[in-house]
Image 1 (cartoon, rainbow, N blue to C red):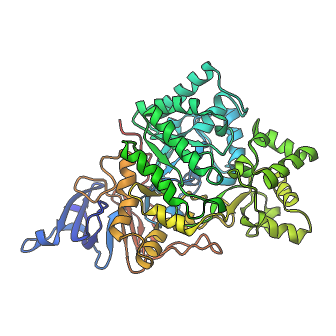
Image 2 (image 1 turned 180 degrees about the vertical axis):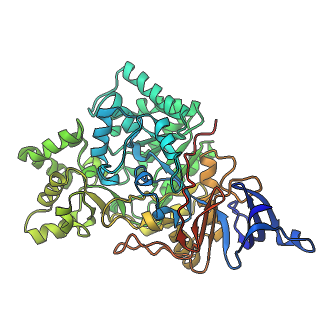
Length: 535
């Protein structure tokens, strides 16, 4: 007798086609039969050792978070309800060109400091890996949800070239090619870049193109956080489309939105650019989160020259009064490349987390607000935070536009990605709310997408980009990564004031046919594993 039958579910199968009522039978981690109501009429209904009454619930494939920053969170937090409770059954890690493999001891220490604002310093993690394959093996010991990995181009450049703003030598480029190839051979699904983050941003297009040629050879995809989401955003998108086309590499645009005042209402221009490329045969997808503010580290908005040489060099520059004044001028008057070419507006930058508890008073306030309370300039406050917190401060940037968010999510190549940073006292609510917010707010309340179309955006489309032959649909023979939710009540409970609240209306989540969320509660099941590149 099979393990489980989910009876009388409204199946939204991920294809985008209309829902249907069915019994879905699961055994040994896979869907073994889908018995539609019409087919079951007049015949004996399937039985199993356990039956789950799904009356009134939608059954869909598990959601795929195409842009996640859970690289350490999955290892330090076995519960990981932030994602599991949303119905996320697979996250894609290694984003924005910076993560923890491949590394040597020097690079690991530098990267830990550089992205402490995303993931913390990692003092509670045993970094017992150095290669991509070893990191994936670590995930295979058992984690809350499945995870795929992108080779981070900035980390590769730090390992080979360092943190200097210069061209790679031919020998260095050859070594970077080999490292990208090794990462893909060991199971990575593609390559990511963070082209407003050092040291990845120092790579010219010719270097990136050569790395993307390697990715294309292995059937992976390129996922850039491109060079600007503000001034010059459209040029930056066009640059990535042209680069990927030159390399013959599939392209997935990370958190593809149009931010800052210069881009209000300009999402149709982006989509026209993509439609033209798609019509010419380009292989392009993108992901977004359904919120207007962004989130990153405070150090990320600095001009690239201030970060050259790595985190220790950046701290030394910030400690020097004359150099600090140059940084301020670039931020406030010129518009730094780290802040997307737009002069910083300190009243849009909210501190979301600090590493040093002594700095907790800044959390939840904008830099401008804290500066007023302290009777000093905003840059004085920001500089104090950067130095005292050793670059580990995380921020929200309130620079997005709702009309752009809605326009982009309708596009047929769109997928869902939380860009969720789980570190900090007040993280962006997208980390805990992205997927139910799509289903509750943008489907049920606003009707921006139909339920069937939205589920396809969150399941089969990302699975196709990841080249997963047996995930992303409710089909016989597919892996039983499944979500059951109430379409009338599903909603994100996380808010900017209370960002760690878990969603409502998602009573059951299965990974590999095992309940990780049951009756609305997290079980002790660790069914997640590394999802490696299809051979």
